Amino acid sequence: MIKTTTMNFKKILPIFVLFIAIQACASGNTNDTKAAYKPKPKKSLDDYSVAYFASGCFWCVEAVFEAVKGVEEAVSGYAGGDASDATYSKVSSGVTNHAEAVAVYYDPEVISYETLLVVFFDSHDPTTLNRQGPDYGRQYRSAIFYTSEEEKNTATAHIKAILNDKKFKQITTEVVPFEAFYEAEDYHQDYKLKNPDNSYVKAVSNPRFEAFAKKHPKLLK
Image (cartoon, rainbow, N blue to C red; front, side):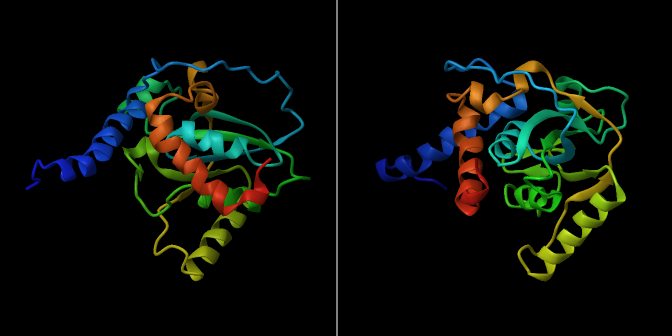
């Protein structure tokens, strides 16, 4: 039982603040004060290769990949579901079996698919099944959606290597064929950049990005 002393209150307060903060991604709360945001210029992505990953809340995943050299754009969306379309409300309810995912547009002359896998595995916890940090459910699963046998083989070999290195005790990441990607609603795109004062961004997205940046500073733009 927790005693309500002044000392213990100081210990409990950060936990209470985090509990409030983590509700944001699951609820789609966008009412936090927004800082000035300048949208990126529209560019054709036709000349870039694209890879698809899921590793929890796409606000976090998108922000990590977009900070990496060689990545032109990361688009938040939905992949891996049973339904023929996807919206945030449907995916969040779990009825479509989609995962929150990102489409990563990259220049293979600058960054390889293998390095994208390094970014993927070193920016989330691939050992938790259908959960990433405070977010849980099939929509937050860890997954690689491969578009070719080469990507499939590279991904499975990478997983085997990190297991052999005992970097992780287990890997719950699904390696499955890509079928379709549905772009998320506009307000989800570049969410971390557009909403720096959002409670979820401060409590979850920022620490996740900072942990990755500390591991791989040379990969950042």
